[in-house]
Every structure is written in structure tokens, then in C-alpha cells.
Image 1 (cartoon, helix red, strand yellow):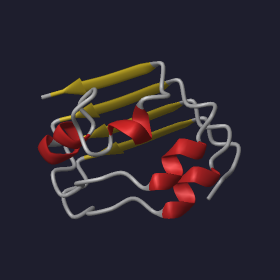
Image 2: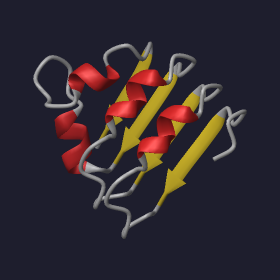
Image 3: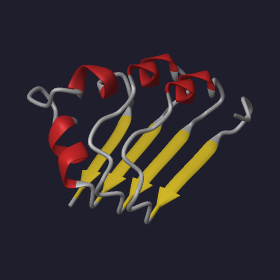
Image 4: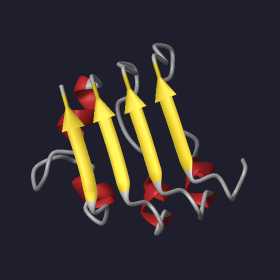
Length: 89
């Protein structure tokens, strides 16, 4: 993966079921957009290592949105450090 990548958009990835653990190696990543990837059901633990990540947008990924809900989702602890978290149906 390109370590100086600052923006990553994943759109309409119906067959995508998980993100690689190596996602956490994108140390310069500031914005991550995941839209219409219904097969994606969780985030890798390595997302906690994305200290430059300022914006995470998850749209139309029902299970992933459920898991990332503030305070109650199973993956909330993985995304709670992100200043601008947008979960959109």
C-alpha cells in the first residue's frame, strides 16, 4: 500500500467483505470514505493506528454502520478517536 496516501474512497464494492490489516500502515491517511459496500461488516483493528485520520464517512453499509454506532456498536472503540465520523444510511 502507498503509505503517503491521504484520501481513500471505496465505492460500490459489493463483493468486499473485509479490509486488509495493512490499512493501519497508511500513516498519512486523513480521509476514508466507504460507500455502498454492503458486504463489509467490520473494520480491522489496525484502523486505530491511523492517527492522521480526521474524517471517516460510512454510507449505505448497514452492518458496518450498526457496528460503529457511538457508545453501543461493537467497533465503536476502533473509530472513537476519529474527529469527524459520519454514519449515513
